[in-house]
Every structure is written in structure tokens, then in C-alpha cells.
Length: 321
Image 1 (cartoon, one colour):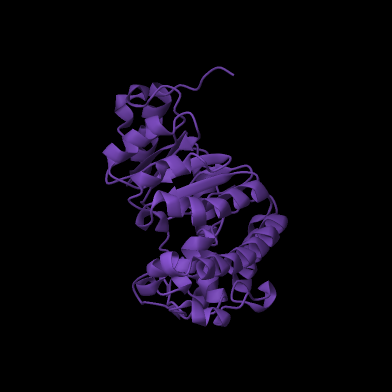
Image 2 (cartoon, rainbow, N blue to C red):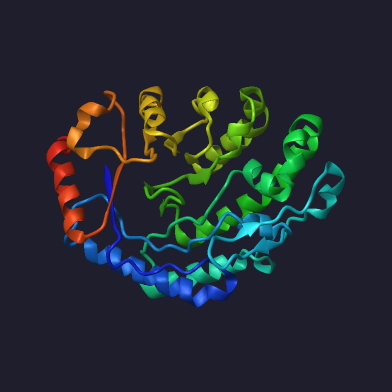
């Protein structure tokens, strides 16, 4: 598959702050209409979608973290605890009374304006352990993984309780098919999330603390798409044990991504990225036999976008089905 992004004429995206609610809705609608119009002239595999985008702060904020809103960057959560003794401060809120209610408000308005069949992009989701690492100050969080693992698991369990409540309502409201939270690929069912803290832990710790919650979420939502931008080559064997892993996205140097294509070719689809994009002109011979790959092209103009799509269709013909 091939997804093309062109920058010319793209509406300027506002920062995802609560005060920018209307600007976020207007931007998402302009972006959606732009993608819809491109269906007529761009022969790639993009599906137009609505984007109620967020930063990584949303679930940590709902659990009680304060949030910083820089003027020139994405919001980020400030940690609220430093030790197991402070775990009592972390409370799981009721969704409608939490800061997460704004996301349903934005998504509802997008659906109202675009129609009930418009595809929704999932908001930014990290794994429960990744969110726990936002709530618990990382200066002491990593030591707690060794010294207080029960407390870390309890915090991740509270995060998971909130995450599941949110996702159950989200999918019931907007449907089980969606555009992945990151990068841009279609999911007919399942869940997509980011798993970035695994670069800093051992494979044994991954098996004990990270893999069980990933397996539970994959089972609950019927499959998993996972993004990882950590230096986590030592976790690849563990990634293979995630049940029903449907797509893996690694953001690493291209030589690492090339190795991953062979390593995971029999397991799942892959959509990797690094400092450069794959060279379409080299054709399918650059990929291992049997690998299922989503390729991306980022260009400036519609003319360049059409040219990239033409190269892909010529060199990567669709198989007869």
C-alpha cells in the first residue's frame, strides 16, 4: 500500500489546547475536505478521515496531572507522583466529568458536520505503562520498576481502567473501523497505540510488565497496531509474542527498519519510517519476500504527489484477486 502526503495548500494546524476547540474542529474539517477532493485526482491508498488530534497528555491529565501548554509546541503532562507512597493521589475519573469529555465533544461535532459515515482517526493512545511513566516522575519511575514493581503495576492498572472505559465508549460511538492514531493507516477493527518506554527496560521486564497489558488490550479489541520510536531492538522477540499484532511501525534509521522487514515479515504488516523514506523507484525487490509493507511519500505539490502515485502503481501492481 502507498500513502501520499503533499504539503502545498495544507491548512495550518492549531495547537491542541482546550481554548482552541473551535479552531481544532475547523482545521479538521478543512483537512477532511482536502483529502476528499484528492480522491478524484490522487491514486494512492489514503482514505479521507476526521482528525480530533491530541497530544500525549490526555489520559495523564484526566488522572490528575497538570499540563503545560507551550506557545510553540505540543502540550505535555507534568508528573504528579514521585513514589509508591503517593499512589493514593491517582484517581480514575468518570469520563463525562473528566477532561476527556472535550474529545467526545469535538468528535461529535466533526461527525455532525461530516456525516455519520465519515471515518474517524483515533486520538493519541499510549500503552498503560507508557501513560504511567507520564504520571510518575521518570527520575524515580525507572528505579520503581525494580524496587516497587507492584506499585507500578497498580498504577498501570488504574490507567488501563480509564483507557478501556474511554475506548469502549469511543468505539461504540464512532464505530470499530478507524484511521490509526499514528502513523496513517486504516484499521477495520482493533486498537492502535504507542509503546515507547520499552527501549529503557530489559526483555525480562517487558515480559513481566508490558506484554500482559498489550495481550489483554489486543484480546479485548480484536487486534493491535503498535508504534514504537524507542531504540528497542532488544525487544523484538517480545514484540513477536504480542497476540494478533496486525501492524508494526518502527521509527528508526533505515538500516534498522530494513532489518525489521525481514524479522517481522511472517508476523504482521509493517509501516516503518526513519530519516529517509523508501525509494519507490527501486521497486518491490528491496523488500523481503512475503513482507506486507505500507509505503509513504511526502512531497510538496499535487503534481509531485501524482507522480509518486504513478511510480508506485507502475512498479507495485496490484495482484489479481
